[in-house]
Length: 532
Ligand code: TNX
Image (cartoon, rainbow, N blue to C red; front, side, top):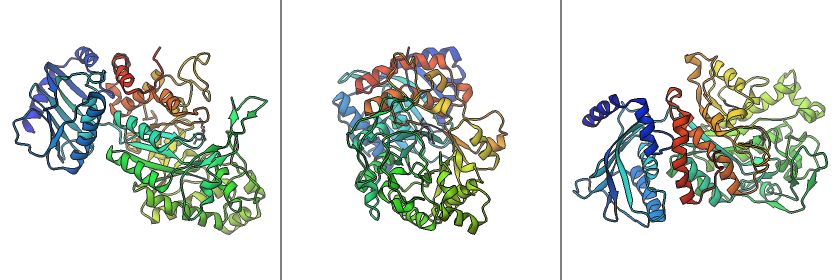
C-alpha cells in the first residue's frame, strides 16, 4: 500500500496538464479520474486470466458483474478465485478500509503482469467501471488494456439521476438498463418518480385501486401541451411495478452501489391517486387519471383521513426501500381547493395556521414526523420551504438554486438540480432538427459548466450541498430509446461535474474523450444524441 502511494506521488509530480490531456485522449474514462498516468506496455485479458478476490462478498459481487460484462461483449468468462497467492496473470481485487482514503476511493495499477485494484466502499466497483471503459469498443475483440496508474475518488456524495415513470411507463428491464448507465458513470443515486397525475406505478397492498385504477389513463395528449387545440389519443395507457419487481430493482441497484430513492408525490400531482380514492380529495370527485400534462387544482385534502392513508402507503413503501431517504414531492400544489374546503379550513383553525402555505407546511411536517419515527428522512422539492421548512427535510432545488441556497442557510441538506443545468428533458440542440421536447435549451457544454456550489454560500454553509442530479421528466419521452437519447451525452457531463473538483474540469478534454467513448456506447447498442 505504502509503496503504491510513493509510486503515485512520483508519477503525478511529472504529469504536466498538457500531458494529461494527450494521455486522456488515449484513455477515455468517464468521468475523468482525479489522477491518471499512462505508461508503456499493456495487459492482455485472455480466457486464462483470473479474477482474484480477497475474501470479500462485495468485491465478489463486483467481480461477478464485471465478468458477466466480459462474457456478454467479448465472449470471455473468467474464473473468479479467492487464492490471492496464485502466480497466474490476474485481476486482483482488494476491498480495503483505509481511513486515510476518501470515501469510495480506488487505486488501480495496470502492469503487463497484473491489474491490481484496491477500493474503499464502492471503490472496487468504480475501478471496474474504469476498466470496462478501457476495453476495446468492438464486440468479441481481443482485450488489451494500457498500463497505467489511477488514483480516483468522487467529489460529491450525491451523484444522481432521476426518472419519471408516470408520464410514460418503463418496464423493469428498461429501469435496469437505466441503472446500468448510472453505474457506468459512477453515479450513485437513482431517484424513481413513482406517482403523479398521469399514473400511479407502485403496488400498495392495502389500496389496490391505486394501481388497478390509478395505474392507467384512458388517453394521452398528442403533441405539445401549449397547443391551443389539444388533441388526445384514446389508447388506454399505463402499467405498474409489483412489489417483487421493486425488490428486484432495489437489489440490482444496490449490487451496483446505487441508492434508490422512491418518490411518492403529495399533496399535489395526485390526480391518479384521487381518481382511485376520491374520498382523499377536497370535493370527493369525480376524477380521472390525467391525460394532459401540467398542474391540476384537485390535490389531496389535508384532513386527517388523508394523512392516515398516506402514512399507510408510506409504511409499505418504506418496507420496500431500505435506503434512508423517502422523497415526498411537495412541488406545484395549487391551494385553490383548500381555500374553499371546509375540512382544510377546519385543520387550519385547529392548528392555528395563518394561510394555505402554512397548511402545506403543516401537511409536510406531519408526514415528516411519521417518516422520521421510522428512522428515515424526507426529501422534498424546493416548494417545501414555503410556509416553513420541516425540521429535518432535505431540499431538492429545481426552480434555480435559490431554494437550495435558502435551505443551506438554514442548515438543511440540499440536492441541486436547477432546471437550466440539470433538466435533461430540455432540448439539447436545434429545435428544428431535434425530436419533440418540453422546451428549454440545455446543451452538454451547459451541463458541463455547472458548479453545484452557489457563489453566495460560505464554506460552512456549502457543506450542506450533497451534490446534484439530472432529471428526466417524460411528458415527451414515450419510449426507452428516447430516454437514452435525452440522457446521453449530458449525464456523462454531469457525472464529471459531480466526480471532479471544479478546478479539474476541462471541457476541451471532455469532448476529446467523449468522441472515443461513444464508440463503446455504439457497441452496447445504447442510443445517444450525436455531439455537433
Ligand atoms: C416541473 S420539477 C415538474 C414536473 C414536470 C417538469 C417538466 C418538478 C418538481 N415538477 O412535474 O414534469 O417540470 O420539466
